[in-house]
Image (cartoon, rainbow, N blue to C red):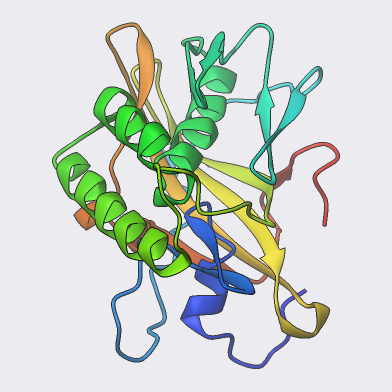
Length: 242
């Protein structure tokens, strides 16, 4: 649990799926704006459909999920829902089902991050990210990677390092066979052994026979993330408790 004291925005954003390793600990790769920390966006609870007592959201079976290490992050896959193709650090080919949408949101959003180098974030954003802010996300990743790699003396487009983070839970916000939105919970270590959690809202759209992630507002994942103090209302991925 996060203690009652105020946790700086930089700390809880480090637990989001856009975290990166810098120096001795977790730090932002593409959301550093300078200035004093702000409260961040707090995702609203799923809205109820008109005339119903709650949103018409899917139920997914997490039985049979497989977890594979991706630079320190365990990412899920399913023989039925995907990703059906993985190569050169990329992952694509997801089923047009709720589980396929969930797995696409997590796998694509994690890869759309400067941390893994231009060989991953550039083709991921070019081929698997859509929306009016996709170009801004690519520019942010390019700038973030350029600065971080130069500071760390990393050459050849290599990853900036591994990440100590767990993709822990999720909560549906909306679902149709053409578009879905999910809140993804990530957890990472804070100071004094405290676990820091953040939730990141990710929207995916079914386009060209696969799911694509809509770029976050302004091309900044920080605009889609918020500190999280409780897992109430979220579904925890099997074996991913922290």
